Length: 108
Image: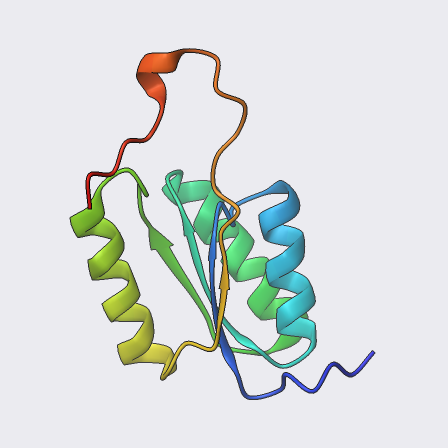
């Protein structure tokens, strides 16, 4: 399928496995350069390597905890520096909240 996205760049959170990895692969198959963000470095790098091998597009693995604002800002800046302007954002990070004290609270 051609969605007309070739040459664009995307940043995907929660991209190391599951839905996030599937979205990243689908976008890469369309010719979109992808920056993958997730907390688990080893799994994230393996996912990025697999997508890169399957599609030949630029794939950037950025281990990032989205609860850390400074880490997110640094990852976005690096993605823009290496992939160019970011056109697509997929906010996929997270899961069911089992304990209220683990909720993300961003005052900004």
